[in-house]
Image 1 (spheres, helix red, strand yellow):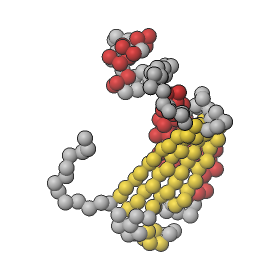
Image 2 (cartoon, rainbow, N blue to C red):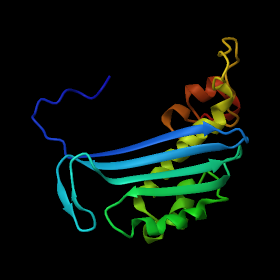
Image 3 (cartoon, one colour):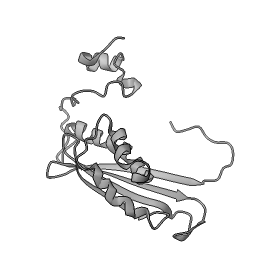
Length: 189
């Protein structure tokens, strides 16, 4: 069910879209890609680009992390197709600092240490949290993804190893899901 219907007239102002996609590579690695756009619904002047018309992205940025099965980043590519300043693309090489890092516990802290504030680009850094989530869904649950042939209806449910205990109310250590599906991690406190 979507949000409730708005009964007051309103005008669109700004749309930020972040889309993440993942791919299984033939070499056994995984590509996790993010794309961010910021689009205004009105024209405005920008000191670097001149007039930015409605629908033209103020920000149009991409990042790709190539990870292995242990969530270690093997390769990084970052691109700025559109930004509000000529200096925006100058920070892109800094994103190579992600190479060799592991996506997992402490990820957001490590990203801030390497690329927080003036060390990075806020927009590209914003994408790294959902990219990490997509990496988790891709690598951890990939065995249950359909292959190129027809899906096997008899396949057993995918075992995920250690569940993400206490990352959400659904995964609470003292909750029903952990108690019934992962009793070895259940903690009644």
